Image (tube, rainbow, N blue to C red; front, side, top):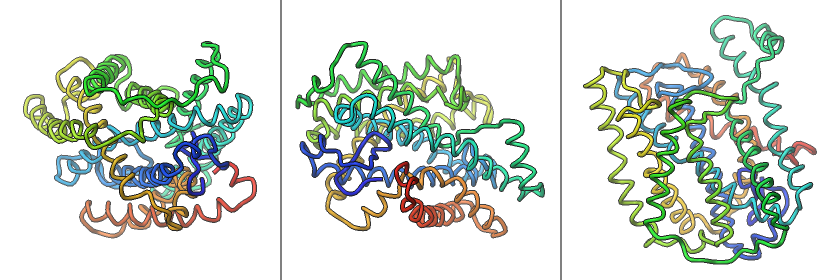
Length: 398
């Protein structure tokens, strides 16, 4: 990934120093890099939760969603994560996109994006994804190699968590096209500090993003893939990527203060209980698991679509302030984690599924297995990623 103080558009990652950014605010890069590592670990725990009973799609489910307390708690954990953490990745990626483009120019910038985003996407679809599927099938008594060969022969290409790389590549191309269409020459859009928008603006954006999600879900419900992307969540992803670009242009992250964040912390505290309460009410009206939160124009769907941005704004703002306050000092350990975070993101399905299968015979409460498996997967993934980032050629990509 990056050494301390260098950041860029690929999971806020670049192998070269972000000169244009660090010259303006070098002290800020440390905490942003560390947020990337934290978010990567949260991705692993998110998929671990699905393994042990949360609602969601994943390669391996030891426990399926049910009405048990552990399943409901893990589902709420995943719903909260889903509301903000991948959007947070897009915001951070957008934040460093303008500086990278200005510094490199279109040809080098896009070449770099295709290398760092496209190659891992293809590698996962052709190799890591089939390996993960084959591991699961082998645990069920089917042949590992026969499954792998069948997936190849039938041209099954799954992007897995690398949907993020696919989406970020699309967003990057869209941003470059937008700059070309506007006729905005490189170097013409300087970073000019301007005040953060008022609370009313953020409130309108939250409602707008929720309304956009609700509109999309009339055609593509959440959880449904279109070309490997869950478009039902892209109202938030698109807005947050664009917000990251605007935040860099206007130098908003350096200006973010408690006074700006406090209203959204309050909104988060007030909004978050609405989803579990809504789930309970919907189950009592429609029957357990029969209410449609992910699509249609029902009150549960409206609640979920509007709930997400209100929770997201509060959590993202809180993470930014906390990380800037407590995670912004030089640290060799954090530098080690940051440099390997993107490789961890790419390889974690194989690691997590492998550890989940190894721990399958262990009889323990779901929440305990969630904690143990998630922790072991994080540790193992970072250890396995270490030699990968040292391989010439590979380290240019990860």
